[in-house]
Amino acid sequence: MQAEIRKLKEIPCFDCKETYPYYVMDFDHVRGKKLFNLSKAKLSGRVKAHEEAQKCDVVCANCHRIRTHKRKNKKMPLSANG
Image 1 (tube, rainbow, N blue to C red):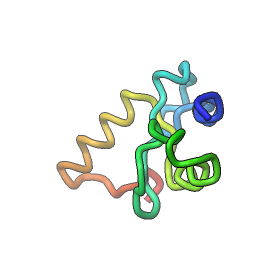
Image 2 (cartoon, rainbow, N blue to C red; image 1 turned 90 degrees about the vertical axis):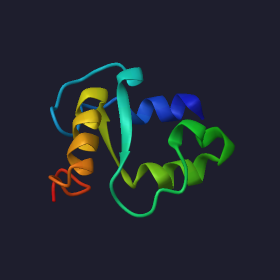
Image 3 (cartoon, rainbow, N blue to C red; image 1 turned 30 degrees about the vertical axis):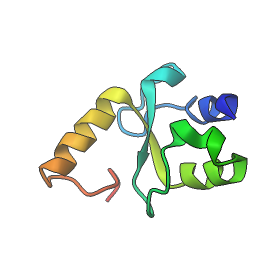
Image 4 (cartoon, rainbow, N blue to C red; image 1 turned 180 degrees about the vertical axis):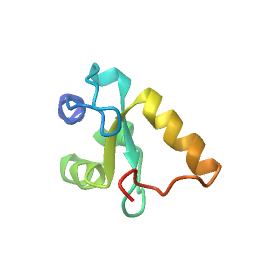
């Protein structure tokens, strides 16, 4: 399961478009209700993990922190795309 989660992170950042190693990339829950943290996916099973990942944008740690800061200050909707 851990290898599958890492594979999902092997894409460019949704926001800045830069490519980083999997350990720099985060799942940012932006669609639907967050049921669990994907870092705990091995406890939830493969299908549920993939369903949860579909609710997320994959962003680098820096962009994730920026998104979180903006959300806390109500300057940005949940998804960067609107």
